[in-house]
Length: 338
Image 1 (cartoon, rainbow, N blue to C red):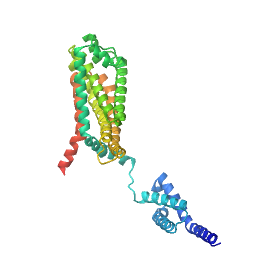
Image 2 (image 1 turned 60 degrees about the vertical axis):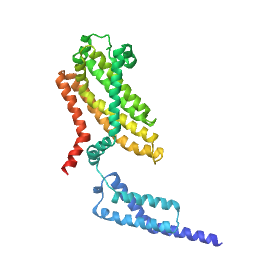
Image 3 (image 1 turned 180 degrees about the horizontal axis):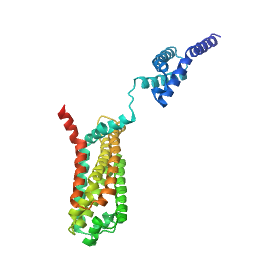
């Protein structure tokens, strides 16, 4: 009889508590839903002024509910409601324009600077791969077919004449060049994604992919250099290549950061180290997509219409200088001004 009376008393207390305060909770939840879906201007002046009052009322209700050990479902509901109210009233709210501005002005360059060891390691691996590919094809031209896929070769091989190779650089028709440019863009995008995505395997796949990409570059360069067209090929590639190869190097660096963090987590657990590295790597990879977009535009437009070697090198060198300044030098200038 005593247990039943106690249970009835708790139920009456809970019902009384709800009856007294539930109207405020419902009103607060409705106002939050409106401002979250639209904007503060969706509320009247009186409704805006009531938001902090309703928030404090919800906090008071939560405090009472916890202290008296009321219904656990009610406590969970009030906790979620108070959390929503806190984030709206006191949380930092930024517009989409502000977020985009912060990404380009701070987040992306900061991520690349954080990855500087991995980035320049990736650049070094590309150079090593290019030297290896050049040497292999120079020593035995059969290596060319083993390194370069037929779809990437575009009909070029060590037996092609100088006239055939030159026609690809300065002629061959817009349809062929546009199609080949699109293939190169797709290929390099795939390389970037794989170099990043496979980095979790202790960075080994990322290193191998970057080396192989450099090896392909060296193999193609060798067949042109053997026909006295190395300088011309360099200009043809540089318009988009300085941006695209830099993007691939960054993607490889992002994969290496994750892989090395998993392999050598230090005092953190492997999962915690991977999560920490992933935040920097993911920011860098968002920027890589922007760089690949720029490279695609340069590849699809500039390289197909500009035939002057000097102009090609100027554009490629200018883009490389732009990226290096953006990622590394402008920060030094800002610190110097301070």
